[in-house]
Image (cartoon, rainbow, N blue to C red; front, side):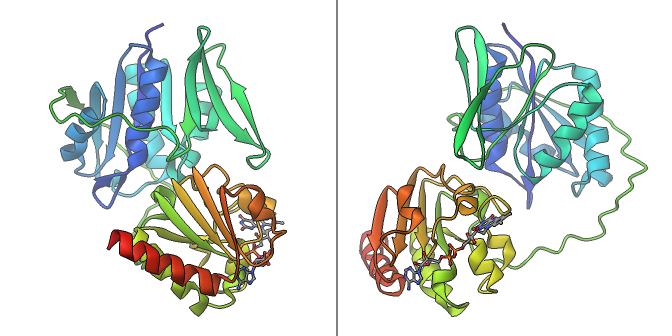
Length: 323
Ligand code: FAD
């Protein structure tokens, strides 16, 4: 059944986030030959529309307003509800990002629809669209189908591959005037924490440290390895609680969920709450001096040893290959 499916593009630092393209790819599956319409909301964002078309959007609707410069629940729900009223899509796909997690339940309740959150896969099986999502902190997966109403889902970043970019693709770009007003939250200024590395949630490679790094300085060898690999540096809550690093680096049940191609866990025991944030990584390498550490149960490659010896050796070898 061909459907019209709406996606929401996410913009950070004037660039589209990868999850915007992944949502379009998921929407293509849901559309089953129908139309994929992407909403591009913000202030002066129209120039990004063609990139969304190159990644598979059939149509882009821009909603530009000074009150959409920074994300607020109020502002974006007004903008999105105006588009939803005008378009009445049969499917909606957002990223399972901070923005998507905040906005999607609000819109689902306004639409009186259900919501499948944090899907890692969507496929057509025997005439049904089946969404897969992790449950019990990633220990099991459940399969869900929507039997009635709008198919509304959020997708976990880095799981559904975006389509091949085709700069020659063409599509319609239109704008919708929405008077975004009466915001209960006004963002005066966004002060971003200074990070010198790659964005953790979108990184293809993550080097993470746990309590085994023993100090803030203990992260230095991990940062050197990450530099060589073009990786982001993450951490267990153990390392954050011990004040070795900032909580923005925390991976796990109460931190960020990451699904990189390669996850290198250094001095992390592998508590269930940590595994919840990284066990879907494509390849997991664990370095731990305790051969019984739980992290080895999910690791594809395990190195039993002292991270302060192993990590510099890895860095030196990767340097030979990559630098
Ligand atoms: P530890 O468990 O202390 O492990 C340190 C490891 O380092 C050990 O395995 C040790 O063998 C190894 N090691 C030590 N020295 C070296 C060395 N020189 N070389 C190599 N290996 C070495 N945790 C998270 O990570 N993320 C979460 O989001 C999260 N949420 C939680 C939510 C709740 C409600 C609760 C109750 C807990 C949560 N936790 C979370 C905490 C979690 O239970 C663990 O306490 C935490 O993950 C442990 O961190 P760790 O592995 O770094 O430390």
